[in-house]
Image (cartoon, rainbow over all chains, first blue to last red; front, side, top):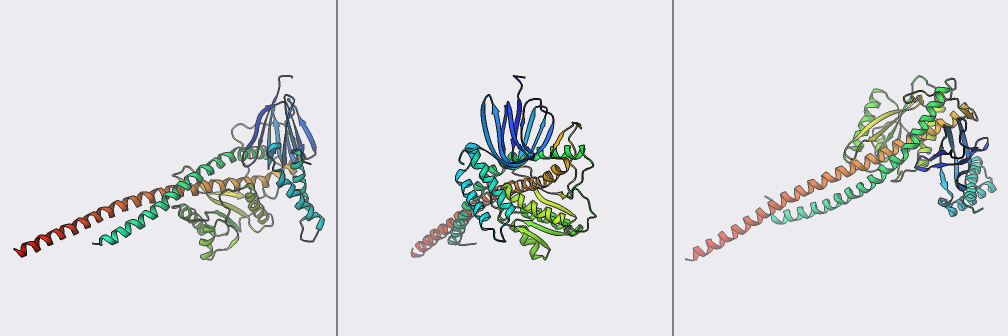
Length: 135
Length: 282
């Protein structure tokens, strides 16, 4: 098993973000975080807003994602994400601004505020900040 | 015969027009390259999502979803993608003509993306359900999502029974082809080649996954059409401006020749007048 690894492809509508051989991936599944090791059973899962972790040779890469799908088959992991940003690509100031905006919206709670939308925006901003190490 | 001064003025004016067309050609070429890159970058996602959808629907033929539901096509809708600006050869005219023909054979409403299509059909009194203009050069997935949301809404509410996408397929910088595809109801994509029956675990379950996947699939289809149209527009503009520049060169040559002739004729006339005058003195 030691020399076994898996191919991970992370694709967004705009580009291919990540495509490499790795040892281990952790994805934010709809039903909770799940890890994929070599020889995993075929699975199709929805993804939540969260942090994707890719581990190769003890090195960890973090990506912030805002939902999508994952397909695992034959040691190949295909992640279709709406957005995926590596921790060093994240625009921290933009995420902070988004967090403040969402918090203000939720705090004011006037009738024209789309609460569900604001909450989603807040979650996305928080995940981005967490992935980039700026909490 | 125009006077030398008129000719000079005309040459000057053509020269400045040529400068503009040349600059536009160059700008379009640069934008075309970028647009082409984006089309290519968007391909893997579109291909993969189609694959997953095909697998999901073929393995779970029992699942149903409002977006898969086929209804009797009473109310049709055409989503027309055109440019915001002109000066791009036959690009807008071709796609508009195609949509006009479609409307003629199967009447329906319109959703227009791009200023040209909206203005054309509004002037002719067609029903435009909604419009999206000024998308700009860099089309983000967010825009496609917004359009997709609107269309899915129309379909689910039963306002339209069939929705078609009318756009321009990008073949190369020289050729672009107006195309129509059925957007809704979603037709089950055929699985390419061999049918691999793999027992997938579905999380949370096939129905919910499908409910998430289908709108994304629509968004992706729209996104791709938008990118293809944008690349086509730039390609058409580049070609049109290239030939405009060539035509301007040709005209300048023609007028320069005429100008030289006129000048020579004037000189000849002057000489013969002088000679005539000198002869008269003798």
